[in-house]
Image (cartoon, rainbow, N blue to C red):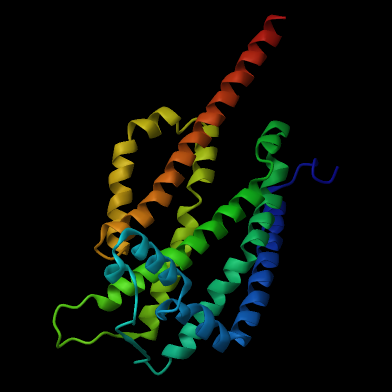
Length: 277
């Protein structure tokens, strides 16, 4: 009954404020934990992608042996050093990395709080169709974060660390640049993997259709290949390794859109039959 009663605009703002406060509390708690374990996190997680024994480089080397391209895909050493050229560089990145880790860990709870605020305003059908939204959004986010960390980040680090215009230039990256690049790739992938969710809701409201996505499939392939070429070393194997998951994500989004359209058409036919009766 409490959810059914009408609320004023100020009541909605008050409700939203508490959802935001609880979400921020969760982020702060996980941020503090990450800050406390900062040295371990930097050594074993953030800087792990800059070490030749990182698991992705082992996968690449195994792939290189399989296709006979071992020299290109096996990583023996990383040709760069990480420095801190600003007095506050290490401290700032310690706080920034802790905050983003806090946001990542608290992400399911944040989505759940947003869902709790939105849910009372939905009708019964909309609640039914949105069932499992928190789980789906969280699952896709962590899948994207994992893809960004285990695939995109090591590829970008390896390519940029070995990119050299002249032998006179040595790669010495600032800690701010290194951590910022990691955060951008990891969280960017997490957001990119929300494409099926976005497609689902856009299809539900009638803005997007599977026919439109199929029509512009070639355009999407070109964009995917450009993204893969930018973030990977200049070899076809690495580019394919990035492009295939992104293309599969697009095709999965087309499938989601088609499924929604079929369900909507079926429901409309049932309603028409019921009205005729």
